Image 1 (cartoon, rainbow, N blue to C red):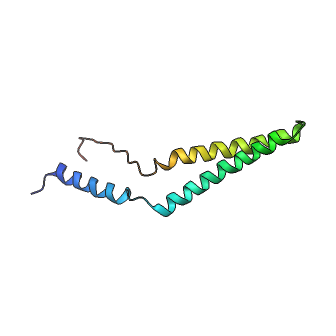
Image 2 (image 1 turned 90 degrees about the vertical axis):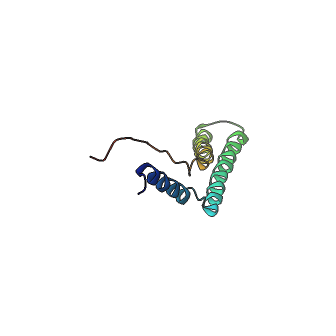
Length: 95
């Protein structure tokens, strides 16, 4: 007869192996998307600083630049956490 905790450990290990398989194509697409957002944000910053006299139209360029930079940076930070599994262990019975 199998021990219940031993059986649950095996199920947990099987589950982790199934989930933690990295998808190389998806990771590559994520890196390309995040990098292109950062490049786009830097382009908008370049356009902002290239303008000689600041007016209200040139300041409108800084908002998309900040948005793209923040979104791209968050995406790069988040990619490594895609396959992290959080476990909640409990000794309670189902009843």
